[in-house]
Length: 280
Image (cartoon, rainbow, N blue to C red):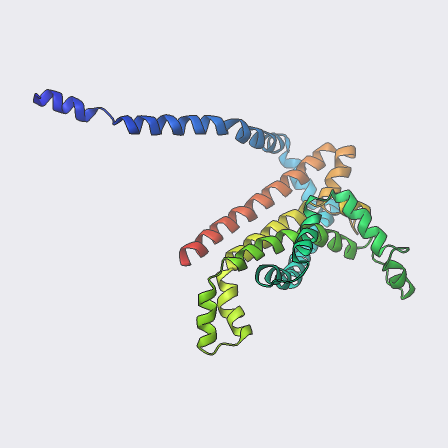
């Protein structure tokens, strides 16, 4: 082999490298249709939302109240979800008992249930003539068509996302680490607080954000159970719905605000989860 042949041979890329490049190109090409389908409507919304309408939506009292109500109710929903959902997630991940599969299916049911059906179910349960509503009404407690109903509707449809995500996180914790903590004298609560929870932090945070995002976009259950009263129960999705019928620019502005806020929160969480993964 001459020196020129050796140089030419080294200059040619290996056959395997060409195959890998071709494979990556084909995979990227196959992914383009769905990516374009997801991104184009988002781009269209941002493109048609006018800056003047964005400013007016923020300063408009009714729209501002919808934004404020969404922020307040979704925050409260997440807090309740974490407080009430964490024990349920731990039971599903760690305990074996009769009917566990049925309980698991019931918790997943609101995820697949149409939101309008969820709203009807809540109304028939907590409404004035509902199973529990009649008892509450007799004591002067009215839940439907109040801010409490907004939170309950969000909690019903969003909390299962947190429970299922955290249950997976609990199940992935190495039991040997918990046993080592117990051997060192840690109580069951101390083991849970200082070992299990920190190791499940990524799952807990991810589940909480998924729950918040689902609460922020909740529409069907809210409009049936809480109604659409401006300044009282009208959240951003409901304001967008009304704005689409009356003032398209207001609806576009609120939709753009909802989109940007959701994206920023999700992006921040992705960064935080990445840092937690590095620290872990």
